[in-house]
Image (cartoon, rainbow, N blue to C red; front, side, top):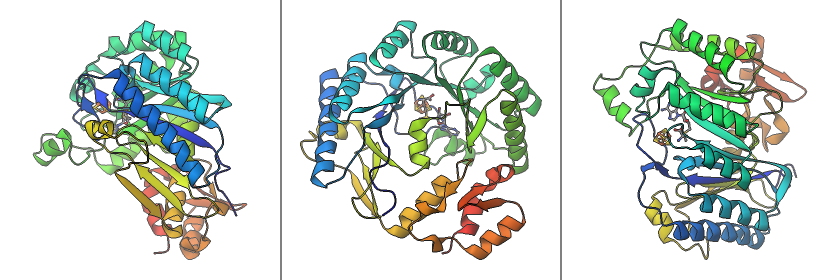
Length: 389
Ligand SMILES: C[S@@+](CC[C@H](N)C(=O)[O-])C[C@H]1O[C@@H](n2cnc3c(N)ncnc32)[C@H](O)[C@@H]1O
Ligand code: SF4
């Protein structure tokens, strides 16, 4: 059997609180309220133990953790005691691979230098900083609490303390001038020696303030051709700075790809703890996959004791669904995916594949299927065309 549970395992921890709710954000994030530290520690701790018990009961073999990701929300607001406890307990019960990557997301408006130093001592070895825009006007538009000078302070401190820094940016706003954006990006990459970048075009997500504003004509989006131009030009600039695009929106210097996110895109196993976090595990000796989703509401999640598994939802993917997901995630990667990962290769429409190959849109060599780099922006329609329904 291919692919089961001898594969990498990582851990995602969701911290659901933020200082404010950004108008574009549909993540499970809530404005900060009082945090009862011991209650949170107990819940995280119990959930970790219960997950391990669940693995053993279900006869799921697992490897040591190769990555931990504190995401949010705003994990740089997390009390240090909670971060410390999660790192210690997960090491005790799952074990760490030698070069484990431990990432924490930080916002430029909610950090201090001392906290970065303490986080490093606890084992955090990668920081992902939510810079979001390189321009005060757009930071304001995005509802962010920081400005350019806060970004400068945060990045200078972070670069002194950590060896692996990633930055998130949002771009391609309506009215944004391509020339301004490219100048900002060039000067940003010249000034800060980053190891990783995640670059997202603004999307309007249902349920957000921007969604209402969009419906009312108060927020506009740019057209597809201009969006494609923004994407191509940004890719060229970033590659001039020796970053490799390894996924649709992610770029890394050599050796700095995000191990945790690679587990997602390679359809490996991961555990999710905390409100709204989800995990996906391949079932033992089967090809099916299970997704566990935690209660989204922080109070509901906290009210569970996790002496046994208590999830909001458990989804069992059948072979077909698992294959579609493996293909959809795998083709996001610049190196593409080996089709031996698919249980049933006939989900691929080989006539469609021929057409895409003839147009140089995808390549298929040594059983590795890959979307050619100039066509990545059309990934969703390519996948739709490629799948046998
Ligand atoms: C979990 S979020 C946030 C992490 C952190 N709290 C922050 O705001 O910096 C991960 C990233 O997704 C991106 N993102 C969130 N909503 C988006 C949207 N509607 N359009 C484009 N990018 C978005 C942002 O770059 C964000 O940093
Ligand atoms: S700080 Fe990050 S997670 Fe929180 S609301 Fe803003 S984008 Fe969402």
